Image 1 (cartoon, rainbow, N blue to C red):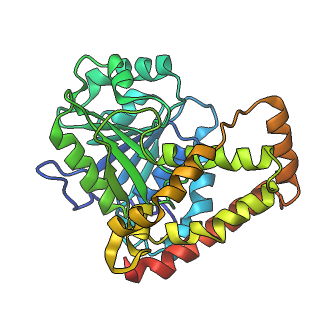
Image 2: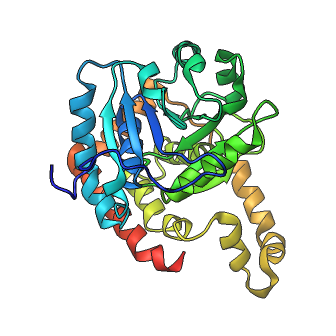
Length: 326
């Protein structure tokens, strides 16, 4: 295998440390779209990665997915430490986690499946191993029900695809060892991620709630005939989406009212926002609405694989362009 491809070299320990317990081995459990993307990112950062998935062909599909995203990681300058990484595939979840100091769990979002996995692997984990779940729809307190000692389980929720979108949402609670969050944050940041701490448990965490709120109104505008699916999407990416890629809404509005900052913005535009909020719609994904959205997306769909490649190329270009300013 050429030296610029993932897993080209043997198992050379990565020299980065997370507090007192260096993370040399990472286990990725569940290697679908999310898990494979995580595996590629960890490999690029120079970690040894053990992958397990119950699908019979998971090794072939995982290797192919990693090969597909590797040029993007390379173009983003994220493969400089990749020669230290090594990739192996395991026949069980237990064998994958047996030497791991960090586990990224990505199995389907069914609570009974996750609990069964946790019960299987918990007796075989090292004392300081951190297990991070990529769960987006399940809450940490629900996940903890599958553990006898949940102190090393945290939420480590990425945005799809993890190798490309920097955000990771981190969460623990009163049952969590605080050091587990620190270890995870150090590891993720070492892989180029941007982390936030979720301080209170709510369904869908933070970022998914924000995009759900926007999508609800986007659906309402289409359903009410205000604009087409294409034009609603265009209104986002060609308008506020550009600003949101630079800064969040609070900081943008803080800058939007001049020297008076956010306080002046709220005083000046508060009545308008109250009027808009009162008029926002209540969308429902019923068959008629789904049919209207599906018909609308078909009007500018270039093909699934082509649109994925275009999406990733645009995000890659934006990340490269803005990196010096971050």
